[in-house]
Structures are given as structure tokens and as C-alpha cells.
Image (cartoon, one colour):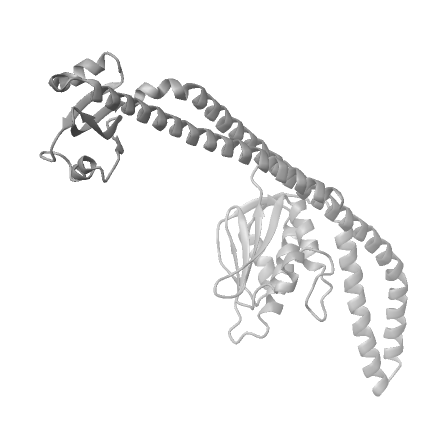
Length: 382
């Protein structure tokens, strides 16, 4: 139990590391974009400053003149009046707006900057090649890539660690369950052996006393014999749970199985089929009888009870229209002595599961829609 908080702390640390790296990558990327923008704005400001020093006669060729000094300059337009300009140009010419910047889809950074030349206020539309700032991004991009890859690797390792820990927890739980069941089985076998012999003597004396009694005594002795029969069934089930027999497998068809089940449990409806398996028919019969008896108990209060048994090549289903699996026992379905029946021992499903595993199959129970239970015996594929 003490290892659980440590394990939780380890998970938190493993998750914080990639989260920190991703946050660092995001911060670096933001700083990179800010640095690019600042560099392009500085370049646009230098171009505007040069325009203020050029003679008015050279403004028409300013683009060619400044391109020699500013290699990132892609285009230059100068506006003296709002004519043929954008809607916001009057605000720049009047001084209401100091500058304006925009990123164009073509990879051009455009700056609208007012400047003064020989007493006039003009606006320069300065187009700069955004790729000119790539030298600023080289180191930052490497850092972002390294941080992102490290975060991805740590996330993968964290996922693998969590998965392995869950698998280990399931393995420990299964080992504990098997150890608990083995202990119950050993205890049950000892108790069954210790109870069976004196129980046989008690039953024999009760039967002898009943034969020699009359009147009310027979009624009481019949009740006692009924309870000894219950004890005999419990002893037999304990022995079956403690000692799962080795299967004697042979080719077995569904028709052979249903022929035996129809006489033992005629209340169910058996759907014909051509399925066949290499299995032990006696053990298979016992599993299905246990499931059908459970279904019979479930539909006992239904107005129109229905139990359907159907086989496919890889599975057998026993379905009923009862109330479904009780919530209080859902997580303990296959545990010994887990039952909601007043007269039940809670060993039927545990025995059936052991028999199914001995046959190389898996037993599963699930709710049906709109009501009822579906028990499925599923053969594992090799």
C-alpha cells in the first residue's frame, strides 16, 4: 500500500517533465516570432529614416537606391495623397495613426510608415521579405525541435511506464485472486472431507428413523433430510471447486450436447446448429446446466419467462429475459460464495469458470438490452 503514493508521485513527475519541455518550446516559439517581428519593424524604420534624407527628386527611384543597402526590401511605394491608397491612409497622413504592419500570405511583411521629406508628410508602403529573418530562427528552431522531440519521447516513456505499471497491478491482482481461490479450495476440500462422512451417518440414521416413525415425526424428519441433502450438495460443490477434473476431450457436436440438455433442462429453448468442438462433453454439460439453472432462477418471477441457448463455432450463449446482473454482485460474479439467492451457495459460477478454463475457454456475463443476462462461453483461439 505504501508503494501506491510513491507510484502516483512518479507518474506526476513523469508527466510534469514533458509538460515543462512543451511549455519551454512554446515560449521559445513565441520569443522567436517576437524577435522576427521586432527585426522587421526595425528594418522598416531604417528604410523610413533613409527616405527622410533623400532629395525629393530621388524619391521616385527610392526603391532601387535603398535596395542596395537593404537586401530584404522587396518593394517600395510612396503615397503623398490618399488617392489610390487603402482606406486607412488618411489616418497615417494626418498623424492620427503612427504606423501599421501586416503579414501577407506571400511571405511579405508590409509596413505602412509616415515620413517627412522637405516639409511634406508622405506614407511609405515598405514590403520586406520575411525570410530575411530566418538567421534569427536557426538556433531557436533547433531548441524548439529538441524540446518538442524530448517531450514526445518522455510522453511515450510515461505512457509505457503507466501501461507496464497497470499490467503489473493486474498481474498482482490476478496472482492474489488465484492464491485466495487456491486457499479457499484447499480449505473447502478439507472441510468437505471432514463433513461428508459424519453427514452420511446423520442422513442414514435420519432415513432409518423416518422409516420407523409416523405422524408428525415424519414431517420433521423429512425437513431434516431435506437440509442434509442441501449439505450434501454443498459438500459436492466444494469438492468440485477444489478439484477441477482433467478434461477428456473428443470431437463433440452441438446436436449431441442439446440431446442431453433437453432431457435435463427442458425449460430452455435450444437453437439448432452445426457447431462442433474438441472438448469434454461432460464438463461442457455441467457448465451449461449451471448457466441454465441461473437463468431459471432469474426468470422465475417473469410473466413470460424466456431462456435461449444458442451455439456458434467459437462460442455458446445462454440468454434470459430476467432482471439482469445485480449491481451489488457485478464485480464479484465469479468469486466463491458470492450470491444473492437465499438458498444458493455461490459456487456455481466459480465452478463453471474453472471448468471453462480447463476446456481452454472463457466465461463472460453481460447485461442484455432491454433486460436480461447473456452468459457466453467463448473458446480461445490458438
